[in-house]
Length: 180
Image (cartoon, rainbow, N blue to C red; front, side, top):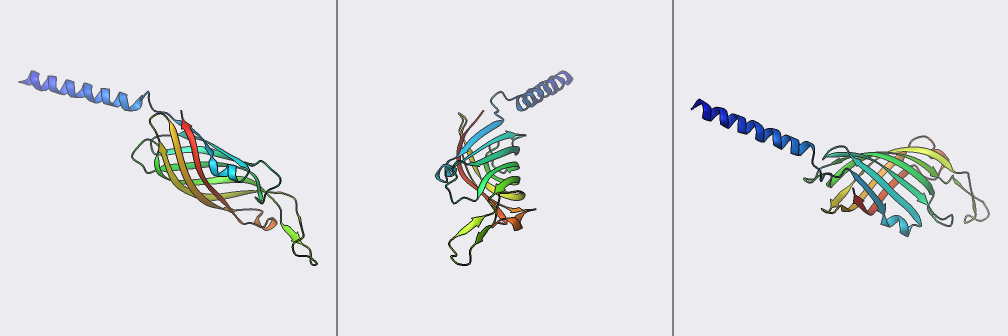
């Protein structure tokens, strides 16, 4: 009788150890995402991002945004935005998420209007500033690694908002990408 209990305990211990090894070293787990924002193309700009998954529920990443033309109504010239993201979905690093971000930006300076003709203005030099903000959205990932993401977020300029016509920044996108 004692041998049967001992055999049962040993088998249980081996099955637990095997299960732990499978969780820790999953060969199908992919930890990197790269995406491109489709909405940015309509605004004559480029927005790409890279994300590294720390575990199933959190990741860090960086956004890069660049305006590609000088003939645009967009006041932002470029931005670099590192972020931390927390996922709430059931699958690995997907579903609904919340994000905190910092953003180093280059924004057009204040517009100074003439008194004779209010439609004529001159623009001050570009302003470099830093913003902090929050972002939220949703990510879907296929088994092959293709992904779709939608997000929206707001942040506040911290240091030089009085030198521009803006005091907030906005991040939004409909992105497609690949997980590898």
